[in-house]
Amino acid sequence: MSTKTNRKTLSHAKRTLGVALAFAFVLMLAPMFTLTASAAAGISVNGGTPLDNAAAIQTAINGATPVAGIITVTGSLTEGITSTLNLAIPAGVTVRWQAEYSVSVVTGGPQELIMLTGNGTFEVADGGALINSYRSGIYVNGSNTVLVSGGRISVSNGAIFIPPPPFNTGNTAVMVSGGLVETIGTGGSRVIISDNPNGSVTVSGGRVVASSGSGGNSVAISSTAGSVTVSGGEVRAYTGGAISAGGSIDISGGLVTTAATPYGAVGTNTGTITISGNAVVENTNTSSGSFAIYVFNGGGTVNINGGTVKTFGSTAVFSDSSGHNPSTVNINGGVVFACNSGITTGTGDGYMFRMRCGGNAPSITGTGAVVAWNQAAGTTEYEEETRNDLISNPPDSAQWATPNHISHANGTIEISGVTVTLKSPPTGIPGIRGAMAAMIVFIIFSAALWGYILRRRLRGNNV
Image (cartoon, rainbow, N blue to C red):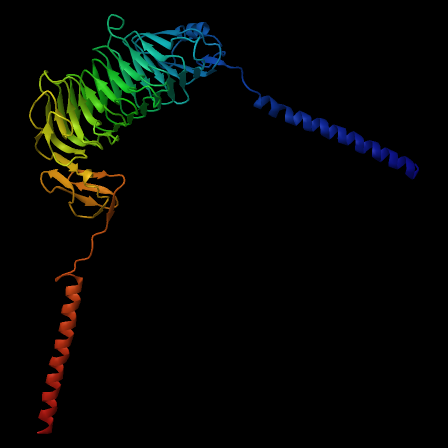
């Protein structure tokens, strides 16, 4: 065979090999493209076929067989939601919501995303999201438990709503242990609403946050009756009270905070507020009309057994509306703080404990402490371990501490805008300078003494 023929054969073989390699490369990439293809939008129940409309999802959930007592909902549906999911959850069954379910239009969507009946549990868990820019999230018509352990609920108003009788006469419980529950409206919204006297709201973790939008008085937890318990997590408002309740309020941990005036971080009508443990209840607003605790109509009871209750306004506790029964304030532990020139009680503006409906000054017993900082003095720099501009009960129980704190027997309070410097070295005996002077005198005396002894010895040797 000639050299020319061999070259042609070799060239053909190379072309054939190149085509084969290219084809093999395409075959190799094909599964990769298949894996990255987007799945069909929809909601799956217990891993079933994705469903893309509320009626089918509702039927699937209500007809599902629980696995170890749990019905799991996953997937995503963010378009075409025009009706409410009506879920009947029997006792002993938990619907675990780990799907994204969202209405982003301002009008045209359902008033609430989900309505519950029965006695079972509805849980929003990690990966779950209920978003309604139009109105509310979960409306509870049964004796259900609504548990938020993760994920988020973001709505315009009423993330979780327990209506009053006769709409709801059951024992409904709302429990937040993780995740985020919030309103995203323009103001005047309420995040968790409990209007059933048999209802209860418990926060042990996670965050409940009321909208910071304009319009005012957005409340994180609103309960006209029933109980509110906070043992951890965060309950926050920006334009209204963090907690407003007519029943009992028990706060033993976590942070309850607002930046609003004229509101309190925690408010009640005639109920009982109990603060204990390591709870922090605060109003960060600096105006005189910002309160840590607000009793709307008098007659309520405030028990501070621990924790920190503080306002950067002048009034720590405000009992409003003269003509009602006087409120009672008992400080048995923890600390109460306000920016005030004194620990005072009266009916008008400016008092640390403002009791418009009358009543006695707070009872301070046990390890309870009250601290006032006379911010009006205008001082912004203090030396540690001094008590300048601080008024306390028990007397002299508070002092300044670095870098910008007030230290007291039950902890510390951070004060923004203040600098606390290290304590200056003592200037008199037995201070450092005095010790140095004493040392110099000792050296001079010792030298003179040894000089005297040496001279005596020399004289003795010369005799």
